[in-house]
Image 1 (cartoon, rainbow, N blue to C red):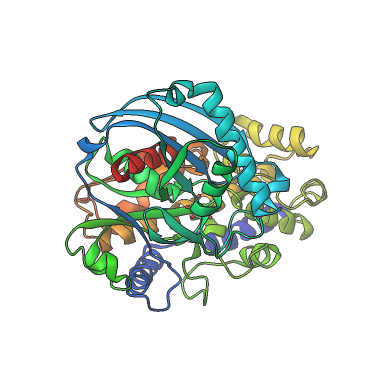
Image 2: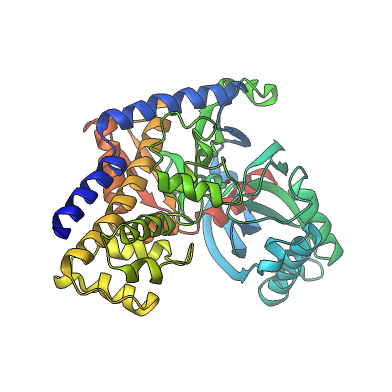
Length: 451
Ligand code: BGC
């Protein structure tokens, strides 16, 4: 009897999570609509932010540039040597942003970052500071949050995402805040470019493949950018007057359809996560596809099945802490094809002290993780297809993607690619490529084109 009930429960979950071709296409229409609205400055859940990065001859990029990549709990300082648009050598250091600075004041956060830049230069950039050869080092700053840019090196934070709460940054120019902190520690560095991580990822790939049409991040957060005709950006006269020249637009697609939830397939589990989050009502699309939330969605489903007697009680008890069932666990479980679902069993046992013996229970747990993963990958594929349709580049496009969800979740890429083919047809030629560390390198390249 329990087995039958489990099958019925799984069917009902499948009906909620699996997206049919028709459903996906409805979302595509709405996303394209929101893109148009956002570009025109009309109300839209897509911010469609200008980056002030324009298509240029990349061979002009030349010299030593620094990049700083802040997008989550880790940030990196990078030194790049570029010759005729080619990256010749890279040195970098990674630092962890202490929680106190994610939730503290802007002075705390930016002085900490400036201190790390100073340390990096002392360790790896001595030659840039030497007597006669000294020059002000140009730096590109990747800041992976929604920013209203006024030029390539000015922009104020609209709203924190991904768990940051640092005060005094929203509404202020992050370039000025960082520059002031750098000046205070006396490093001779000038911020010449500011960009989103999606923009960095697109530009980094563009330097080796001119068919790169989009930059996408599927990691802790999720977002995309793409090349758009400047004249289409009618909300910003400065950009629109550039006419046919192409420019990069940061979509901030994580917020898609958040206002009225007209087409997103939100389940009661998604609603509960949203309600308990630090930004309820915002980033609803991101909350269905990014690494910060995928494990939590699966956890909510598993706990509810357990509370309804469809999984052992130990599941609800062992997984009772929000966000402890991380996306890497749900990702690994979703790919478990071992006999007796051994991987599922051992992940639950060793991380949560939950012992499950019955194969049908393990099977249900695995399939819940598959449903959550596949919906995320379908939604990501839908967003990419919409953007390529809007920019009329479905024929020949490279899409540069980075982020832990894309890189590390088994089968994620395959489901995305299949969804893109379903929406755009077999004749479309869309290549998803992993662009590791593009966000930081892209900022260095943009700095080189802007300095
Ligand atoms: C931010 C975006 C960023 C994305 C990926 C989102 O939460 O709003 O600006 O590109 O995360 O890092």
